[in-house]
Length: 284
Image (cartoon, rainbow, N blue to C red; front, side, top):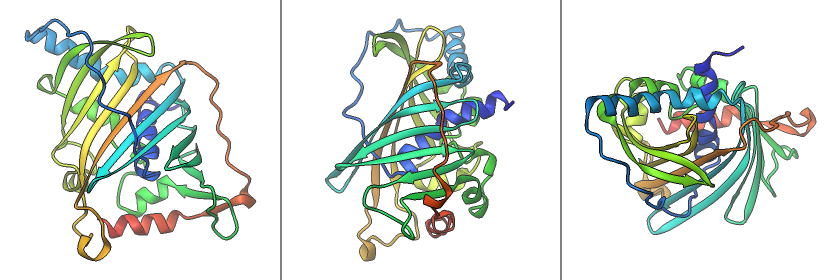
């Protein structure tokens, strides 16, 4: 059986696959403000908030499975791209199924044993409708830890890096009819894995908002960031934007739901792992 840390990293997998690999971006708007929480600047109050955030990923993973939705929005140079995803995730092994709709197209994706399969309407590789990306191999070829590739935010590592000064209790809100408490989190990227490249692209901190239910589980997670173009990118030649503002909102519900993911038939799959890895190295 995998460790709690491994299970918790499956939560971050959803963010990676929805907002990075798919290039999807969505979310309708900023979350509306909820009922203000009582201000508590005491040391004890700050410690309780920090402990709640640190424990949230493990407590969520203890549910084993859940339904999830993912909304992302990317804005650059006056253009905005939205996408909406929905599916189920198994926190035990990180497997998931999801459909993501963006710009009138619906992408089907599955994750099985750290391998991503995507089916994009109208796109085929060597006559095959499914594209395969081995996330572990991509990590190895890019010099990252393959054991952590499933979590771009490095959820478990971030939780450990959070200090009392990084967390504030922001208010109470209902998320899909469930009472939650919102925490605003700003995480220092310094001690985290793969920090050098991420700091160049995103900056020194990762701003997050977490909405936790009465059991300490994540009901909503929002990450807002401005992603800078890699140094290797040449906007004057490629037309690439200098920076992109990205907002990702993920929600969990129906904990304990059935969640099974199966790889597509081998004869319908084309492996594009090496191509993806090469693209990643060029942007480093």
